[in-house]
Length: 486
Image (cartoon, rainbow, N blue to C red; front, side, top):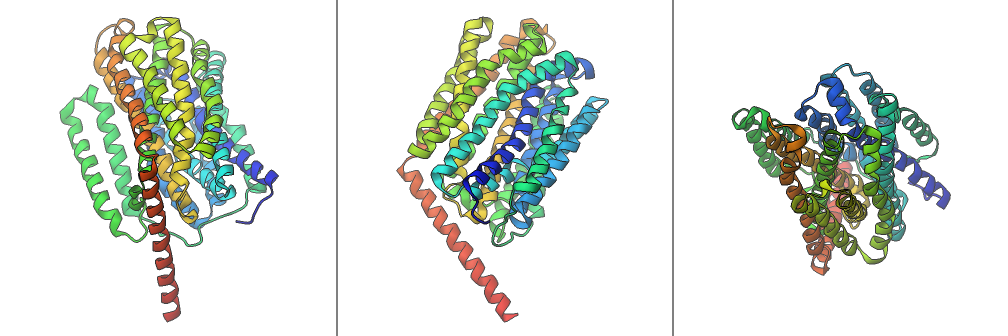
């Protein structure tokens, strides 16, 4: 890709952030609409889980395919295709007549969304080649998540209150079209120097693993252990097969050699833990504020601001800290704040008073604001630029998988705890095990951030990068030699 002027680089960053904004805004706004959708579509708790998880599940399953495809056929081309499909999927969601079709159309949205975030991150990585500039750009990227968290509940609450939950999907249409036209005009095409071959077997195994695992978790409280046991077996078999099959491929869908880098492995697990906490936090908070406290969608959205505003403010600060001091300090702040927030709810029932509820939301917003930039920067830095799309896609997949599991596990625990008891009286005690799960997620961020950001961890990253670059040179020489003999 040719060197761009500073102004053009900032414009490319803004366009990429627009794609992140519509994807993130859609999810945060939809969380506020869950109770309204539950009444309108007569949905159960598991039905609500599927409206969130059908999207994040498909997204997680296809992100790595989208990243490697973009590296192969062109990042701009795949990015534009993603914007088109996501916008059309949003229109279909707004027209869905029942829960089943809404879930199907959410999956269509996710097919488009899978082509946006990892590809946009790959475009940013190849646009901002200076490490400090890249860290700041990723900080801006993280701040957009904060903007979506701040605007999503408010926009969603206002739309639900004044028009209805379907209007949430209308917001994506003008933003998606504007991003599409700007991409066509200003984003340069780029691709990896050498194309990677598709891996259909690996892709099918990933879909089987994520889909079976999520189905087993969500449906277990209502169906019981016996009906979901075959899906748990399928998930285990898919995981074992994936671990045996992928290392044997010359160009696998999942490059398992990345995980020899302790920072990369740590970033992956931290992403799963942090976004599982986010998914569970939003799910529990939305249902509590509207179904237990009896707030309307708009006021529930306003109550989310104490979480969203710190996320927005802390994300760029985290990006600057990563650029100047490395990922350790932001990760330690993130893990400490997220753990403290979850403990407030798990041990002290923070929901029951306004002051502790406010404090819990502020702490979680600070923690989540600091966690995003070090995840992304650690995942892509040190890796060969030719594999930026694959590395970014693994990080994005970890986020979506985490959010999927967070909603599935916390929702299943909540449904089991409530049972046939009166909802308002049973909610707080039924939610307590879910808050302890989120506490464990926060502790995981803290401990992994400490263990995978030191000197030993950095040495493993350097050795991994050298190994990957040496492998790329050997493969390129082999291809060139084969061409000469032909």
